[in-house]
Length: 267
Image 1: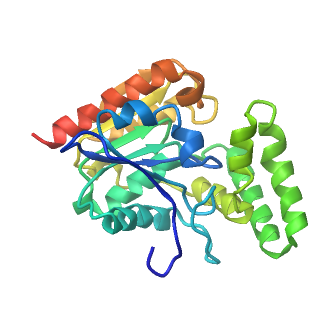
Image 2 (image 1 turned 120 degrees about the vertical axis):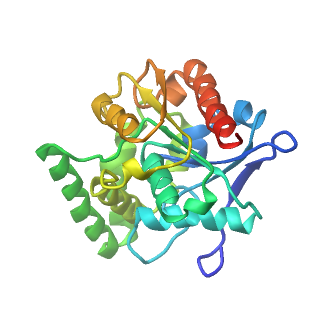
Image 3 (image 1 turned 180 degrees about the vertical axis):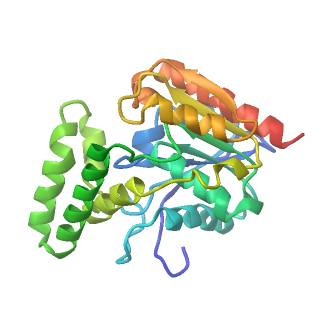
């Protein structure tokens, strides 16, 4: 992208005349880690655009501190670079926050929203706030420590815990992260809140709740749904990783959620 460097973008063209959706992945993931189970079925119905967010996987690297607002602007920039006038952001977890901000900052470009396993805010209790504050300190340390030390930080914070449940392919993807930026993304996520303007969202919206989610509590997901006027609810009996662990349930639900938004936006 102009002035920011090169960015790898995955595209599935979809049927002729299909609506365009932009997939926005969650924190510490990548587009492929988050959405690999859904690409094929989504591509049968929609034009699908996906890319890694800043600092994640092959995403943009900058010296500037990570901001969710910049990620929202990246969504609009990628669409413009590909000649796409309007689109439906599909955000998962952190991607849901970016999708909300994409609507707030680029309202004339957004046809609708699909928000999954996400919330209007991510830190409420004291222990949550302290956890995100801890990421602030680690992110500052990662800015000044040599590469070997940064690698050790990333191993201690994330990879060591994930390798027990992730396959080698996913671990390799995560190892490409810029961990300074990923840690800053966690800090930014902890400070995010859309509560002041959530009720202003005026485009068709689907909210997919993961009913047994230990990461984004169900009550926050429900609050998101309740505060967006006219939002349509979809439910999946699964935890935060339902798009992978319960793909047979989640992916068809995701297609229905997107189809609802597209249908409403074309009325």
